[in-house]
Structures are given as structure tokens and as C-alpha cells.
Length: 578
Image 1 (tube, rainbow, N blue to C red):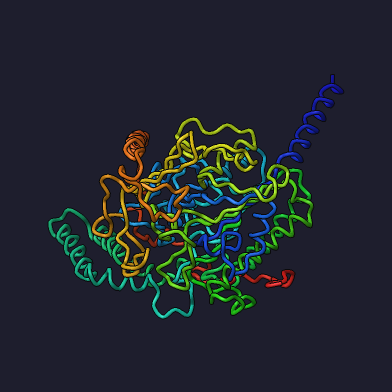
Image 2: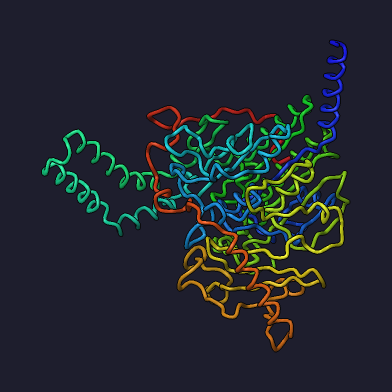
């Protein structure tokens, strides 16, 4: 009997081992604010991206791959969850908003499921290196309720927040300082603070509270009023934080060394996996090319496009190191590699904002192609033929169900999943997009809808809202970024209709006079919008005022009370720039 049990154990172990060897690994490479027009294989001939281009040549290029939002936080949430951000309160409100401060309680709701969680549940070793930007703490500093480890990542090395203008040590006035100065001048800080204190004293006078309570309420009220100012004014020190798992290891971080350090971490992670039987899922979430633009010194002045071009080429170098490591370890053939950007280039930033190629609009414009059509390439030699081009509409939300199909894992049945499996398209299947409709939001306002009929070769796009761009541009330079509602937009009734298959630049609007299909197409799209809205439920908005105010008790800190530390790391093993 004991021998039989032992044989059964060996059989199970052998099956598990074989399955572990057979299942593919996953590497996800995510850029920040990179425009389609900044990558060689998507038409750029002045910025060098040979390693991204190589992935396209050896695998597939997706020419109509769409982000679910045109700004960092909601876009990244949709990528991980396979769902529109509006379904769980991560879309925003009247403006295209990310999380601006680290010490706020908002974040990706714990009720959401991510594809790294699914992979970890199926035996994968998982890691996130780089930018998170989906919240951190809820009730106190250190509770880490929104930490990457809560959403499927075994290991985290990176930025719980983001790389912002504030992280540039040489900037004279950061955006946070400018915003704080204007906001508190408008709100009349001292009048608010005095009013709070007068109310508390009045409560004491009428003997509703004791002096101890007067002190506690006064301290609490003052902290709520003043700490957001402190946090905004000291963004570099308080928001530019680097963590390893649950520990703050650098505060403020040195942005010029972040990409090489992430690269070194990626190499170490891959080398450690070589000795394991477990497959792995690695996401490298670059800070390039978000402001502040401070590439490593080895890349500065090397491109033809200033610091922006230098940052793109630094990222491409890092991707080359990751791909070379996979090759050296014999992992290339069975590793699914996916590269994309979280949203389009920030065109209002001028030369430091990149290019979205032929497409109108950019970062923040959830209804514009320049804001949501992402430069995306995928490589998996076992399944994807070299030189594959996917022209059908696909979404970053499709990664969740695609990974699920590869793992033979069931999708969550207790929620609406908006992504679709795109493995057949990646494999070269000649079939329409798996999406009948794709809904394009700016914050929580529906701006445009894509419609792909099952017959024919046309993808329609209806604009219910258009941006009031500055004359002669496709941006909102006077505002720094386009807004989603109000006087900054135009509401179209009937919606403007384009054939984005044959007119991707959207220069030729379709009318009933120019195409007899126009009325029917509009009717189908409007009906789809109504059905889509019926599928939405009331949820807590993570961008509501109460969750968007900085709180001192949520502030991460190392070396308290100074809140300052540096990581010592040896980068000599990397040929930076080589």
C-alpha cells in the first residue's frame, strides 16, 4: 500500500513538473506616455528603437491596439483587470485624472481581480518592477491595502506612486507647488483654519466638549487643511518614493538611475527563475517617458530629440537587455512578450511630450486616437509567426482573457469582463475583432464608441463628444491637458461618424448624404450605448474628494522623522548604453 501511495505521489509530481515546463512564461513591458509616432516599427525614423522593432519583426505588430483610458491610473487599472475603469470607480470625474499624491486612501479596489493574481493562483512566480500608481494605503501608513502584493505580485521593486515633474531636483517650481499656491490662495487657507478653530471653541463654550477634545479636533482639522498643501509643496520628498516589497528604500529617488536599476532587477529575477520549475510572469513598468525626463547620463545627448528621445532610447536599451537575458537563459521560445504604452504622448508638453504619429489628440483625450491607440508588439515564437500584423481593433483589456486562455483558466463569473481573447488574431487568424463595440471614456464621460460589424471590413467610430482644441492644433495647450466636459468640449447630436479602417486620421466624417449606411450605423451604436450603460452599477468613486485629500497618517516614510534614505546599488554588471 505504501509503495502504491509513493508511486501516485511520483506520478503527480512528474505531471506537475512537465506542466510547469510546458506552460509559457510572460513578460509585460509597459511604457509611460509613449506615443505611437515615437517607435521605429510604427513609422519613426529619427528615434532608435531596435529592440522594440525586433519584437515586432519576430512576432506581431498590433496597429489598432487601444487603451481603455488616456491617462495613467485608469489605463493601468483596466490593463490589469480586463474591465473598464468606470465599473469600479477608477475612471475619474470631470477631468482625466491620475492619483496625484501618495498619501491618499484611494486605490484599485480590493474586490477587483487581476491577471497576475490568476497566474499566481495557477502556480506562477510573479513580479512587478517599476511604476504602480494604483494606490498604496487605506487607513494608516503601512497597511498597504492597495499594494501590488495584494493584486498578484509576489515581488515588487519600484514606484508605488509615479515619476512626476516634482521628482526633478532641478525644477524651480514643481506642478504641485504651483497648484498648491493657486489652490490655497483661492481657498483662503487661514480663513478656513480660523473658522474651524472658532467652531471648536464655540462647542467648548457651550460645554458640548472637553478641552482634550478641543485639542484633538483642532489638530485633526488643521492637519486636514494644511497637510495637502505640505504634500503638494513637497512632492519630490513625499511622493518620489522607491520601495522593495513593503519597505521604502529610497526617498526621494534618483530618477536618472531608476531604469538601469529596474533592468538589473529584471535580469536577477530571470536568472533566479532558471533554477525553478515554476513558470513566471514579469511586468516591467517603465517610468520612461513620463516627466521628469532625466535619463541616465550614458544616454543624455545621444538622440536627435533631446531628453525625450534620450529617454525613449534608454528604455529601448533596457528592453534589449531583458530580451538578451531571455535568450541567454534559453527562455525565448516559450515566453510571451508584450510591449505597449499606458496612454498616448503628452503633445501639450511640446518637444518633451512625444508624437502620436498621424493620429489626432494625445494624453488625456479618451476619445481621440492619439490618446488611446498604443504602439504594441507581441512575441511568442511557439505560437506567433514572425512579421504578423494585426489590424483589427483590440484592447489592452484583452490581455486578461488571453492569459486566461493560455493558462486554461476560467474567467471570473461574478462580474462583467470587457476584454476578449485575442490569441487567434495573434496566431494569424483572418477574422474580425472579437469586440462588437469598444467604449472610449474620458473620465466617467463616454466620448466615443467603436463598432465592428461581423460582416465586411469596416470599423466605425462615433464621437458623441469632441474636444475644443486650440486653433491649428489637436491639443489643449492653454490648459496643459484637455478636459472631459463643460465648455472645453462640444456635444455632437447626432454623433460624428468615421470609418477608421479607411480613414484612421478621421479627416472625412460620414453623413447620411455620403453613405446610406449612416442612419443604421448610428442607431446600432446608440442601442449598444444604452445596453452598455445598463451593465454599469453604482460604485464608490476613487477620485471623489474624500478619497483624494492627502492625510499625514498615510504618508510612507523611511528613517523617521527625517523621511529620507538612499539605496546603494552596484550597476557595474550592466553595460549601460552598450
